[in-house]
Amino acid sequence: MSIKRIGVITSGGDCGGLNAVIKGVARKAYDMGIESVVIPNGYAGLYNLIDMENVVLLNAERVSRIEASLAGSEAGHSRVKISKIDDPQKYERIKQGLKKFNIDGLIISGGDDTGSVVVDLSSQGIPCVHVPKTMDLDLQPYSVGGDSAINRIAVFGRDLKTTGMSHNRILIIEVFGRYVGHTAFRGGIGAEADCILIPEVPVDFDIVYEHMKTTYFARIERSDVRAGTYVIVVAEGLQNSSGEMLYDESAGVDAFGHKKLAGAGKYVRQQLEKRLKSDPDVEAFMKRTGMFVPGIYAIPEAREVTPGHLVRSGHSSAFDVNFGYKAGAAAVILLKDGKTGNTVSNVEGNKIMYMKTAEAIKRREVNIEELSLFEALGICFGRKPLQFKPEIIEENRSARSM
Ligand code: F6P
Image (cartoon, rainbow, N blue to C red; front, side, top):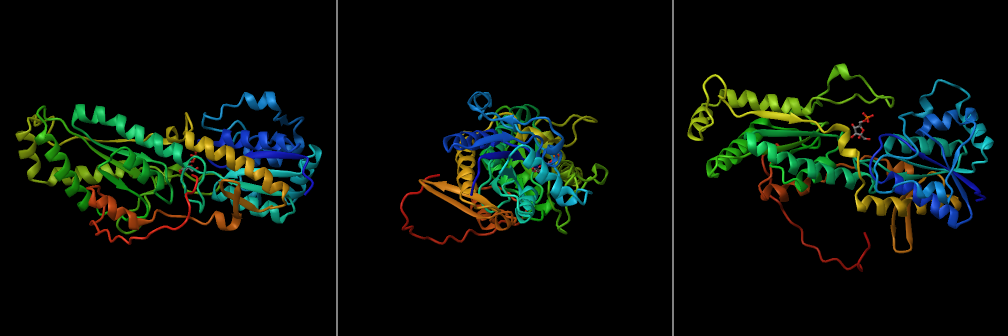
């Protein structure tokens, strides 16, 4: 395919590793004698390209000013689904914008909604290749941003323990994760959380309460200074035992039409407090441990903390910088090779793997078989622990790169 100039778009929620994607695209394109430019602010910028006076050329000097280790995206973001724009001429308008700036193809980094637009644009005859991106990790291949978010959740969880221990509080950390709990799960394990609640497992709060009571009470009683905390990491898309997601109806919907989630942490706290108040063992525990103060401390305190956008801000993990660079560079090779409507799934050695974007954006949930392994290690997932039944398999393939 004759590609002389590529437009780079980042779309959906920002996260770690995106600047590495942009640099990977720009540097590989340069290496292949292709120019690359930024189309700013996601699909909003693509729709409005025709009205722009200029686009930023990613030449060597401009690229060197982008910090790959910083999260967020130098190209900017928006949540716009092109098919939903109320303009019958939208595809023509986009094509004219691309023509105005001599852009022959697009490299678009984003999640499932962004990917559905890649499929849409590709079917409209606009060459484009997708680089998987989402901190939620709910695409079929690995997506840039996941590792950074996991590491940040792990650090927040670990850091919060100092204040949790000082006040003997139960801490509930609510993290992003709309439909799947990959980042809550892996970040929670990284933080050595006591309990991890994810959308894939409808929660039984009596089980969470009993686990908390056994673990936290014993922790404080064992401590020579009567200190202890109990950490719960909960994904925002938590479901109750009836399988209902907990929405804050007042929060409204985002531009992709998804309900904004809020309140999982608060809900968990309320469920625990209700049980603490009605449990006859609690007053004796408070008295035994010297925590009871009439009229002030009748039950242990529980607090929810919501890091929100902090889990996808700040710095990118080294893994995401690596993946971003190679996936961005691979996307240029695929675009040049005419692989429009496809997603880079990995680069291993000299092999560039790709899959149809329509397949890549199918939701991938946490493999809950693995939870029982962690249940055997003492972690609560809000359900009755299941026995881990291992299948032991010898691998024959040669060593793979990451
Ligand atoms: O991009 C995914 C995500 O981080 C979700 O985990 C979260 O629900 C959502 O974005 C938040 O979106 P926004 O930044 O638009 O509030």
